[in-house]
Image 1 (cartoon, rainbow, N blue to C red):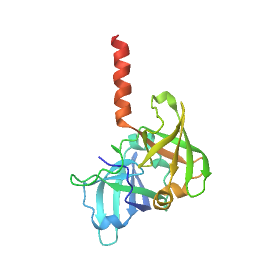
Image 2 (cartoon, helix red, strand yellow):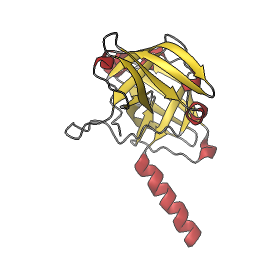
Image 3 (tube, rainbow, N blue to C red):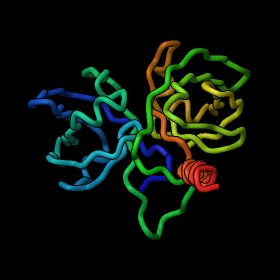
Length: 201
């Protein structure tokens, strides 16, 4: 489990296809502390470390076909900056919200407003998949825990402070950028319960 508080940026060094899977080799400072079989969030996707070179700050993760089809990882290229977060430690502070690392679907950045000291991003998504947002609710965008500002049927917006802009890959976003979305787990459970209640009633 994760909190949506990005620890650092990594950079894709190598991409290797292996059958329907893709292996990504990533360079990041946290690689000096990683171990094989650890879980790390990559743009909001929980992936397992399968190889590590602690000395050269490199490690490798594998994305299977299901992950590639559901997320934006299939669009990654060498040199791409990726948001990284290790799983929450039992004695750590919970600064964001519950992020499972299980991306629900992708969205597309449709508009970016540069405000006086902050940025506002508008993101559109396919509502037919049954996901929803609520104003002031939580949303994970590329693994970043954010608060929804505007909420519409297939569109929402989030506002970014300078620290988040500089220390995540949000500074690389453009209109048309595809992003990973994980909707609030509590909201998903409530929606499911209400749907079941309506069926029973």
